[in-house]
Figure (cartoon, each protein chain N blue to C red):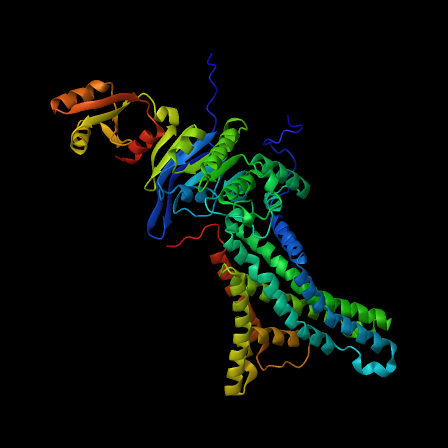
Amino acid sequence: MPIHDQSYRRYSGERERQGRAWTVIAGTGIKNMLGKRKFLGLLIVAWLPFVVRAVMMYFAANFPQMSMIAPSPESFRQFLDQQGIWTFFITIFTGAGLVSNDLRANALQIYLSKPLGRAEYIAGKFAVLAFFLLLVTWLPATMLLVIQVVFAGNLTFLSANLFLIPAILVATGVETIVLTMVMLALSSLSKSARFVGIMYAGMVLFTHALYGVVLAVTRNSKFSWMSLQGNLQHLGDVVFRVEPRYDTPAWATVLALAVIVGGAAFVLERRVRGVEVVT
Amino acid sequence: MSMSEPAADPVVIINSLTVLYGKQRALNDVTASFPPGAVGLLGPNGAGKSTLLKTLLGFIKPAAGSMTVLGLDVAASPAEIRARLGYMPEIDAHIPGMNAVSFVAYCAQLAGLPPVDAMQRAHEVLYYVGLGEARYRNVETYSTGMKQRIKLAQALVHDPDLLFLDEPTNGMDPKGREEMLELIRDLARNKGMNLILSSHLLPDVEYTCDHVIVLHQASVAAQGPIDELKGPRGSVFEFRIKGDRAAFSRLLHDEGLTVHAGEEDVMRVFVPDQRGAHALFALAARHGVQVRHLRPSLPTLEDVFAQAVGEE
């Protein structure tokens, strides 16, 4: 005779109010990624440039003969540029399967039969990739600012370059939004995460190569809006107040990025549904 | 003073519901009422059963009509409704990369249960559906029968007031099917769970449900309590003759009797009035047909279904 009846029982405990399911999706997604050793290795490698920069700041602050490596607004811009390669890999590693794996396992019917809407599902998936992108861009860049203050022992650099705080936020924030939306949209187009990764890499490389061809033909860099990477680089140059590497007007870059995000949102709206209706 | 209980409010009310897939009508002016308890949604493949459930869940926007589930308007309060619903989809569905207990607990959290309660419920429900021993296995390694059970577990874990079960015995072996039907019956009869069981398998519906709604070609062909539909509006006979069955079937049909093919060469003849077996003997005598076998039979849901959809 069983000590405890393992039959079905009604539940009378508390329930969270609606609108929080995205945090469950995000939290679980982040936890799952952190459980992968290869991904942890990638994250550690992505933080190495931060360590190098922090060491440089230490020497610049403590040894006057090393002043040539003292930080400037441009060095923060360069740091975020260097992180581009890691954001590329992290976007593929984390993002490719976010929606495509759910499509493969027909999980959307499970998700959307719970009290959450499509927007909440996308918000949860968005938060997973955005978290890791900010973890290797915004967080180390902001920590470098703090470390600079700590090593220098004064606020001189920071107060002279106060714009760096919003600049880091805007550059990494826009990059995160654009890359995450693009990856989520691509991920919703296929049931194969591997294929999504290839599509993403192809898109980033192809648009930049296309711009390269146009540049070679026209000798004019104002067509950088054709390249996803070019748009993000150009926006970064503008917000960090460094000499822009492209002649494209800032509004054209902003417009191109807005179109990319809008297009991705449109794709997600069409693809993330509880039922696929083929007419 | 009457001691009879007042009729409980229907859990689902559908008014003039039309759903279009492009130009094709998946549901055509469907009006139906699902009483509390276990209701079978019966119909051949393509009749619109799954479409109806998905429309009630808010997955599909109807072209016309209105629906209320548990007293809430589907168009106005889809999230509130889904918080009180459990849905077991027809196709294989799971969250990838999770073991069973993580998957079910995750579903509970998505439905609003706190993490600790979600995990506790997940263990309980997995034991209830018979997956207790396999709860730490990755769902992707499960057999078809186990996948059906885990779909039921994720639908139950947040203790819904209404369950939608879409072809729950699909792909199960006889023993598994029997156990699944026992679970469904237990939920409906002993646990007070309202459920809608969509199936094309008549025995499944007959075993588990009290009411049935028959869908055929995107419309409601019949609805009501199963006992009433099978009820005393006529009689059913198993009937075997010597001679041309097809020709005699036509004669029966002309007399207003319904004939369904039974096992081997036995016909199941539905006599809709009080004429009984005399009508059959008289007709056979009139046309010189030898009756080899005639036995009164109980109307089954199959007869109800065949009559509703006009099958012969």
